Amino acid sequence: MKIAYFPTDSSRGRGMSETEKRPVHGLDRPDAEVSAYTPSTVLVVAFYGVIGAMALFPLLMVSLPPLADLPNHLARAYIINSLAASPDLQRYYAIEWQPLTFQSIDLILPWLGRLVGLELAARIYTAAGFVAIVGGVVLLHWSLFKRISLWPAASALLLFNFMLAWGLVSVLLAIGLAIALLAAWIATRDREGVLLTLCFAAGVLLIFVCHFFVFAVYAVLVAAFEAGRLLQGKEWSKLPRRLLGYAATVAVPLLIFFAAPKSDTPVFNAYGGIDDKIRAIISPVTMYITWPDYVMALSIIGLVAFARRRKLIAFRATMAWPLIAIALCTVLMPSQLLSVWGADFRLPTVLLLLLVAATELRLGSKRAAITFVSLVAGLMLFRSVTVTLDWRRMDDDFAEFRAATSDIARGSRIIAVQSTEDHRPEPAPSAFPYRHVAALAVIERDVFHPLLFANPTRPLRFVGAGAELQSDQLSVLRPLGWHPVRSEFAGADAATVRQVEQIQERVQGFELITSTTDWSDWPEHFDYLIDFSYGAERNPVPAVLTEVRRGSYFTIFRIHPPARP
Image (cartoon, rainbow, N blue to C red; front, side, top):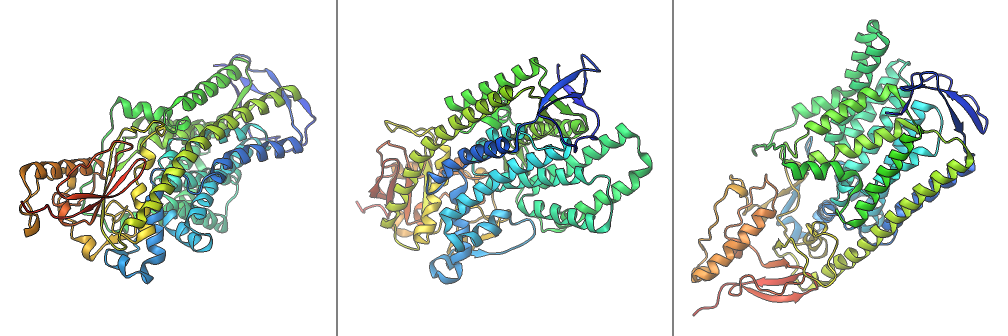
């Protein structure tokens, strides 16, 4: 591997000429020298400004970013803001704040929504995640190399990843904050004091509030960094003091975690198959696993391979242990962790962001710097344009559905079923961003939607009429079957019963594995069924469904008892 290693952190703060020789230690030539070009402040600021504008451009071109889980988060924020004034919402929902039942999105999005509206709040929150990630990488790079360079801007190429496509915006924001706090830890590693420890404890608590998973990642990173420093420097006399300082910063989140009430819902863990692991590996540069993702992946691999071949990449050795720790966690991470799906595709992006921060591209001339700037800007422009085109199409679809909900009676109960294939002449890049689009009906019509994220991981709780469908058995374990209770449904023929059970099977396959919702008698508990068939014209249960509104990719049906023979 032809990579140069910087063994120490000293002598990085002094001024530099435009091009100078920097001694480094390489694997091939221990006393090699690499020419280093220092770009002007104007070029650095302009480059980050252009990259930032390109990253934010897709957010500016849509009213609501079409991210899979985002409508669900927005509906929850709407309920938090509107529950006190809406009798319809009060029939179904309650808010109950407990430890571990919230993330930053439950605290920030409702508050921000009251100030600027939920749509703009969602875009601001997502943009904050972008800024936090790139800013965190820049700060970590500075703490390691003691200079602001062009190279960390390449982290923006990893913003449009699989986590973003799924709407894990609170995870992305927390990742940026965790990287920034790691940078602060490294920058102040030789300082001590109660005030500094309290500041770090507050920062760690903020990350914990944003997302517990990222708090665990941060704890691993700091522990690995300190372990590596001890092993490299053999400063064993300082071990007790460092352990005490580290423990003080993570103590409060750990106490909250262990003291928090535990759910009675069974916990599921599953490592996942080969397809899950392939998806996790490519997740930092893929959104919908379509041709633009392949172009980005191949381009980034090609550029990195070229830089390695030309010995242009220098690595800060003090980050070796944190990177090894996260790499091991990435390999070992199951796909389903504590009943949370997708744990394995969160860490690869963290790993690559840390790798960007821990390396430096050694540019030998102004021409090389301009070439690098042009390549990164070109890739970022390509990514921004292709994402914008996809988002504009899906944003129009979201707006179409929101307008169609005017035909749903306010305060009613809805059930949504999803297809996995798009049959329209111009299909969307993927169906999963539409996964929770039905949740937008909560915002428009104050309806009950049992697929909202609720307890034990969120402050939302189903009550009253909304709690009638909850049982003590996981929905995935419930056998298919409809046995009508209400007399007006008792006359359903065998064909209708089978069709109702098919809808039950589709909804159960779509639900969270921890759901305890009983879908078996859905015609007797809901007022409307929304079938997201993506262009396929059908009535899945003609005897109990009457079409109310047909859109380009959905149909709204009113549910009623079957007609008497």
